[in-house]
Length: 369
Image 1 (cartoon, one colour):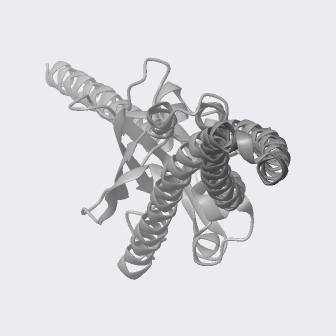
Image 2 (spheres, helix red, strand yellow; image 1 turned 180 degrees about the vertical axis):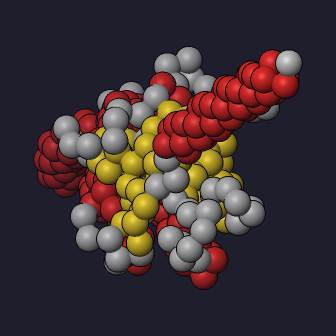
C-alpha cells in the first residue's frame, strides 16, 4: 500500500514538471517571436546618414503636399551642405541640389529640375515662395520645411506646394546634424532664394521697360521715315517751283526791258505801254513774292528735313539700344529659368515681331516670381 502512494506521488511530480516545461517553452517562443517582429520593424525604418563634410543622406524622404493634403514621400536623396556654402556648378548656383536615389514623384517633378540626364535634381531658388524653417522634435527626424510656387503650367495656372525634408538622425549616440548646422543650412537656403528672386524680378522689370522703349521708338521711327518721304517730295516740288518762277521772272524782266525801250522810242504809245507796263510790274511783284514765299518754304522744308534726319537717327539709336538691352535681359532670364525657354522666346517674339507691350508682359508673367 505504501508503494502505491509513492508511485502516485512520483506520477504527479512528473506531470507537473512536464507542464512547467511546456509553459516555459511557449513563453520563450512568444518572446523570440516578439523580438523578431521588433527587429524587423526597426530594420524597415531608414533614418539616414552622413555629415556636413560628406553630405547628408536623407533616407527619411523628401515629402510634399498641396494645400491641406497629407504629406507624401516622393523621393530620397543626398545633399551636400558644403556646396550650399560655396556653389560651383551652374545648377548649384541656381538651386538646392540632391543626388536622388530614384526619380522624383509627380508633384516633386513640378518644382525640381533635373541636371541633364544625371541623377542630380534641384529645387530652383527662385521658386521658393516661403522661407525655410528648421525643426528639431524629440526622437524623430529633424526637418527643413519650405513652400514652393511653380511657373505657369499648361493651363496657365501657378501651383503652390509645401515641402518637408527629413534630415538624418540617430535615436542614441552622436547627432548626425546639430542645431547649429541645421540653422546654417536654413539661413543659406533662404539667403540664396531671396537673392535669386530679386534677380529674376529685376530682369523682368528691365525687360518690360526696354520692351516699351523698343515698341514706342520703332513706331516713331517708322512714322519719321514716312514723314521724311513726304518732306522729300514737297522739297522737290518747291525746287521745281523755284525754277519755274525764275524762268517767269526772267521773261518778265525781258518784257519790261523791251517795253522801256519802246516807251523811250515811241512817245505816242506811252499811255498804252504804261498800262501794259503796269500789268507787267504787277506780275513781276506777284512772281517775286511767290518766289520769296517758296524760298521760305524751301528753307523750312530743308531745316525740317535736317531735324527729321536727326530725329530719325536718335530714334534709330534708341531702337538699337533697346534691342541690345532686351536681348541681354532675355539671356539673363534664360539663365535664371532655363526650363521656361518657350515663354521667354514667346515674350521676345511679342515685342520684336508683333510690337505688343501687353502681350510681351503677359508672356513674362508666366515665369515666377
